[in-house]
Length: 420
Ligand SMILES: [Zn+2]
Image 1 (cartoon, protein in one colour):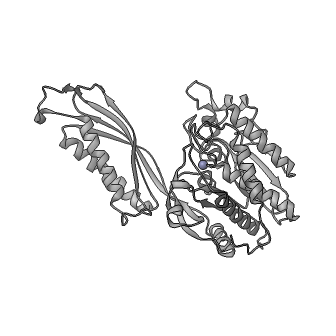
Image 2 (tube, helix red, strand yellow):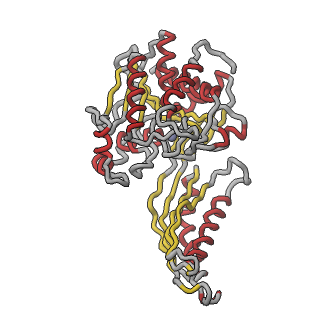
């Protein structure tokens, strides 16, 4: 790795700390189960607090359990530069999703200490509450409330499948903090994260310079046909809701593939990930289905186009199969571009260190996407093996984690010391 700076993070310490956190909620298959507001989450938070305090940073907790560790700057009037991600995981999660961004931020704090550097602006590490959304059904929860995108009272009333609310879960692990959960004056935020996709690995690139997050549209769909006997109903008389649904799913796939050259970097996404069939009997022609459809694209214009054309095309398919389609738009999110000056700092760090990088758009949602609606924000991606994430086999090489952390260090340092 070219070392064009003598301000190097400690690769071994970074990796050791990643493995220290990976032991909390470790699964037999080598992954992590650290679901939000559980005992494992509490242990992860306690360790985060302990290590931040050992690095000389006082830790504040807000009313949503978001944790902030500030390292003071030289100029008391300057706003802090934030960095961070999340320590919660999916039930069968990996060691790096979220944890990398938090622990890399800790390594930045430790490196600043080692070098005896005082930045102009304060530097502040964040652990956002419940990014994954797997327990209470609301992803990026802590950053959504902080950013004012979700109302705190409604989020705190959300319950898990046992009926326990977010408010009760926070109290149970002792992480209802005294600070109000609301955006506070901050200069910028940088989030390092694994790509969770295959592009960097396929192109042999070390760093993804993330320019923003893509637009999305989600639907709930219901197809109604008619239940009838599988043995006696002739083709002409069938109103097979599942067949109509299968053809609509094929349309979703076709729309996804309409763009690009058929390569790994094609921008469109279209997915049906959940389907219920009624009556779901082996020898009854299905009379009804319920399913979810989502499209994502970096281009708002393309999502607008899909919103305008897909419902009629899908309804026509249902009709051709003797069925009716009810399509309900659940939500539409516009593309969220990141701040050009923050993205430029990431890009300059990649160039300065002689790393290989490429600009890209985030396919997944991240805390940084919410934060970007309030303060200048950018993200840094590192490759992960086979693009695999939300999986216990999620894997990152030590040098990949170190490269991403070095870029985070450079970008945060540059922002915190910028002339204003
Ligand atoms: Zn994540």
